Image 1 (cartoon, one colour):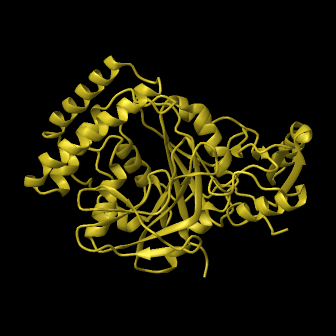
Image 2 (image 1 turned 180 degrees about the horizontal axis):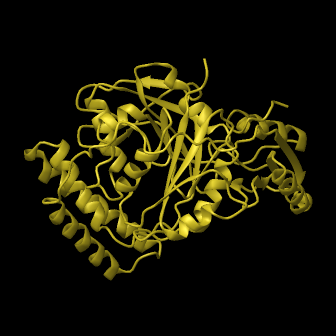
Image 3 (image 1 turned 45 degrees about the vertical axis):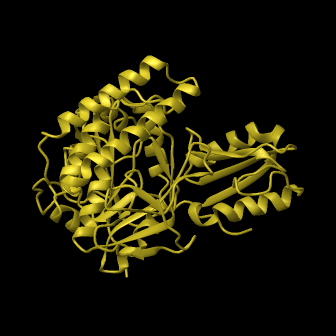
Length: 411
């Protein structure tokens, strides 16, 4: 049985450098038939036209601060049986699509979500979660390797993250796509609730992994300090009107304001905000909530058939290589790997110093996966603080840790 065709949809606004890096990662995806749909502002469209960027992209111009409307526009142009979404400030592991779409072999699975690694490239921002009746996420235990298919009880839903999610295109169209009333916040949460309400199953897929960078935006600085809370307030008002009984809304809102104030105070203590910022941001939160009480909402009527035929990217079957070196040889090894990556391979370079430093992983702009840290230090943060080992043993352990997501043969 052949793999389903997939449309990878990326929305980008005023983050051309992040989009360029994201597309470099998408170019390394190892999957049969997929197309790439970029919905972007002029700066993003210009990136897709650069000669070194992935070819055959479907480019749709859109320059409004509304991720739901942008995703719906991408959905209209997407021709894959499955539509997968990744943010412009994220990079997928090479085996991302293969793992993410595998549960679609089951006809009852309508949605699929993977795991999201954070800025250090190793710890997870998001793993497996469910949603309670109030739209609040709760961690859930699932198999750490195999996909888990779940159908939630009435009133609950399965949480999948906007930067790492996929749907059957026909189901998402039937549900009305994303609600433009959610301009950047709670957009996928609303869809998660509607998928569950319609009785569809969702698969949580641990090996479908992306690395998320939290790039700066109009609402958030690159240190994750908030710039504005207006849309968060407005989105909660819309969400409550759609999903929460009226007699429970005021109590939830009081709890949300306490949580947001505490979050702002933590940023203030860390030096990212001043006391006046806390007052200003809380006012914006409340103003947004008031406006959200009257904001028009509802699913969009979407065309059943895509506007453009399927346009498969010229994906190359790439060999995956793993190199481990001591610290002083790191720069030379990364440069050599970049040359090989330019010729079409997937390159991982592990650079180990004779220390106990924690490890970090990032995707180099030249297409190389780089991991740096101490020979005796942690990669997975649950490991012992210090562990005696040799270069060969540590190399084999790190290689095995990423083999399934990067497509590397075991040592």
